[in-house]
Length: 342
Ligand SMILES: [Fe+2]
Image 1: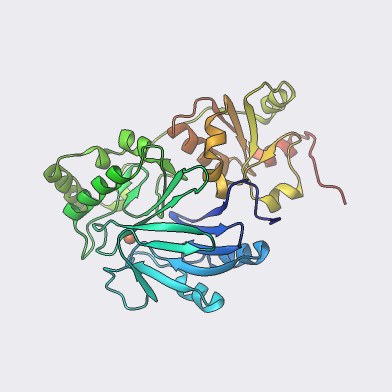
Image 2: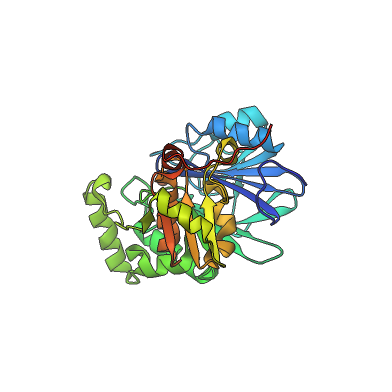
């Protein structure tokens, strides 16, 4: 089915929408155009609306992975606009959900489905959502604020419970394969996604297997300002646009030259010879990306591509290079630009 949002070949369409440190998701079944939203961040309503309209998608379900007193979703306004229903975990303390889901319950959108996993701890109603591709069996785990890049859900808010969170993390580890991609709803490290395997290697809170030590660690975390929590400092190799032009001319097998801007930006003009993989659907291209020998990444100014470069580098991909200054620097340097005809 032809769809302006499609740049992948699988059965699932996916967009990750970021507003500051909040991450929301729009998923859809390409065969039926039925869509589902996960944790749509406040202030992202317009972006969701645009995606639904341009893709001809029908939003039927909005899932909130937990009740968030700390942050707000735009679920209610999306519900009003689309007539979709709001789903939450059955342990929710809030009364504004239309449907509650239990552990291992399936949530359908078109011919596809997500499986809910109850993972209390950050809140009593926290759930994770698992998508398994019916053809490839690959899994994506939307982990809300239970498991994030380099951290786990905060437990200093009322109704949070670090011992329950400890059990939920063990549950995630026992039920998901290490290759499962982890797509959280919150991130303060300027990363896009991770894998369970990489979190098991790098996430100090997931690495802590002693219950009491974990509880102590979470208590200590709640005593310091959240803003002061450590961020993973990680630098990735970069190159100038002049050197990038030479690399493009001498491209070798296994090298990828990727523009991570969204399709509308790419269509206005791009570096000749690069391919478009929008940052918002990068997770769906994971298998292709991890098979590359070298990946050069550019965007408009170099900021988004750096986020992608750091994400891929952290996931263990060798040979990731960010193009400093991106398309702006390329244009400013007077290098050739490709624009669609007409
Ligand atoms: Fe939260």
